[in-house]
Length: 500
Image 1 (cartoon, rainbow, N blue to C red):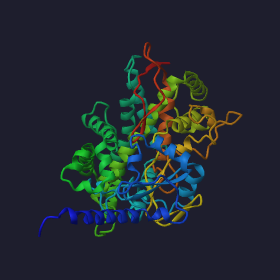
Image 2 (image 1 turned 30 degrees about the vertical axis):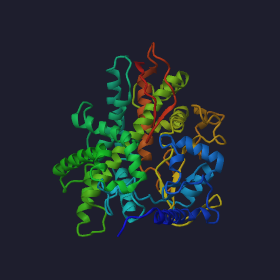
Image 3 (image 1 turned 30 degrees about the horizontal axis):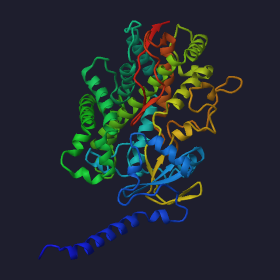
């Protein structure tokens, strides 16, 4: 067989180009469907990927929203995506049609990290029997171990005392609070999952927290973004291990802690923690190959709870302290309310919330302004749906722009400023706002929301009861602009904690 000549090469190139164009047009067919959401024109084969800044998707979505409206479409290579913006569209998609938008997109990378048909954890699990089984187990187990009850509240307030002692050790000198906040929040999760807390200088605990931070950097890194965008690359040997080294190390350490829990467990006694409770379910499920209660899923469930439970709450508390040093008038009002309702003689309690409207407003406004998970986690439609009159086909990825609700200019008086009065009525009473959804909404809303609310209130009030916080002398005023990544974190800052 001879080589292609110039005369025969031309038709071959044209044929290949026509073939590739037809393949691309097949993947664009949804755009021609009746009432499909509008969006920017994708490039053949690449979609809209070159038009997006993956280091700041939020700004991209804000610009596209102003051009195309609250419901617009994108094409990421061959994947159709619809972005949902605004309170009305968000409620219609996530709440009114929660059953049809509760699925998660398949992520091929996860299969190389230990996820499989019967071991998907919670956060990224596909919607179905296994996810419902695990969600029900986690919610009921957390409730049994004191979610909303006195026992868990005591764990949090005792950890808050340890945190205050660590702040006092700084002796009023400038320091960054992030590491200590991570340790305090991490110990609450450790108590729930492993039945006890770690000392703040414990070697494995420090490694666990460091790896959690590394995972955040890893997931927003260039290599992980490429693997998610071009899944076929996961088959290149060693590439996934390199891109997600911290996640693998984190899960290996979780395996070690689970193994220790298993060795000290007494099946004849009531479960000490969530790991014991899960192992009880594994025993019951023996012989049932369809059950999601297995050793592989235990490590993923514990990993999900540990990682999500630490980074989100500690980041929100870091925002809270930053905003207190930037707004000393707000800090003084919170402390005045603490002094009037709680005083200095006893620890704060959850029951105090009802008598502390301004503090409650501040905690909620910290979450709204900090806006730490602006795009939530992706959803996927499990059947054809309609949102704001647009038809969204089955199998479409949904990006939920929660920031468009938390910073909606038609809802909030000062959407881009820290303004606790957003949550107070004219008489100074705390008021809930429908547009407050930092935990998302619908079936996939954060299962740890009650625990997070408890931690935020108790840690925040304990710290403000004991200390006054300020910008260190001689240092410039910190910025209140966040750093965009997997989470929106405060710009690095230091503070001084002076005992009251």
